[in-house]
Image 1 (tube, one colour):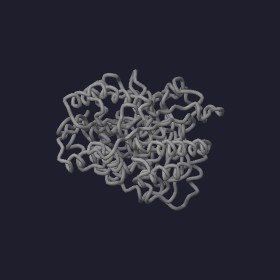
Image 2: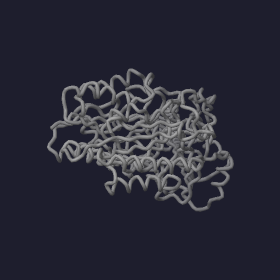
Image 3: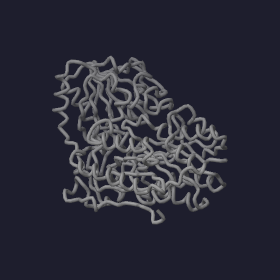
Image 4: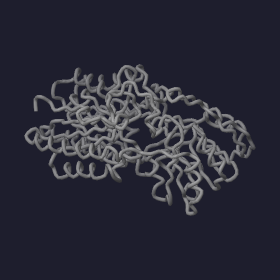
Length: 508
């Protein structure tokens, strides 16, 4: 028996000004994708879904062709050249013959010419493989769906958490269902519905309402064998594509299809009835920082969610840090901010140097008519590092990461981390690798949205959400949507469930 395994992940913010090229798809600290044995070694020992595939292959004594390991930080549209290269690697392996294809994908990758890149990959795989070949797909909670992806997969399962701390377990769910199919114990059918609603990412997490009991119901149905798999996808709302929105995917046994259809309807009805609860109301930056200043017990997490590279932000918008300094907050750890040019200057000056530098603000964001505005800072170069660390927290545990060269600039009692590579701070390693313990600071300023809760949540006394500017803004009215299917709630108050899309195969 032989399995083809591939990991290709990118969450595309179509409003980001930074295109995503092949070299952006890395495997931890390396440059560019990994293939074959190098891909397997990059995956082993981590909490990726593809690692669960490797474990199943080992249990079944199956040969593995690990076609590619390629993961890029969320950013702008992926170039066609990069996509063709990655797609060809998987198609080439699958076309040489296998018993199943097991994919660890994101589900919100947009390529120049392909708004549903994962759907296009699945279409090509179906063209080059025998009819009925099992194709299992694990997807991020923020996946967007077209029918192309649904009708060409055999099994789909999505993360049940946000922050995503069940990535390996999602791979296990896919692997179990594919194994049952291979062993003749299951005849799965995919059911899907996408609702015309853009849920705000700060209101999506299954850890709390309004999503919690929707996800709980789906997980209960799967665990009780009511269906094979049940997944709720909050969707990625910062993509101007026709297939953005909240989706529900059910994998049902063919002979119990009605149960799957009923569950699909129940989950969609519940989500739609709560659509107003998925809207996040933004506040002003000065008001948020002033509130934080009144909180005497630390650490206080200041979450700049409008410029979060975990959702495609450039991470060089300086407005929130500027307000922190203006209002005189003390004992602050902040960052990491993306600014390779300033890093080069600080490395040239060296540890201990007193410097005045213009940090960040080097990227314009035309989609939102935002101009880059650097922040002039005077301080001391406190530390210089290679920016490398291994994730120890619950999200992507064991993965080796790199911020590129990283400098710590101390301005009074504010330590500012400046790096060569953007990285969302979901793990304390972004700071501790430089000898700075964020748990001992009174304030920790992070460019994040929800993932910070994985590594920083356990020691936070307070969390203040700060609606800074950027291409990750929670004010969807700022975005010039042109390709999005309309009507779409909350952009259109008159949207109805009938404005969505669904898929139930005719053969069912």
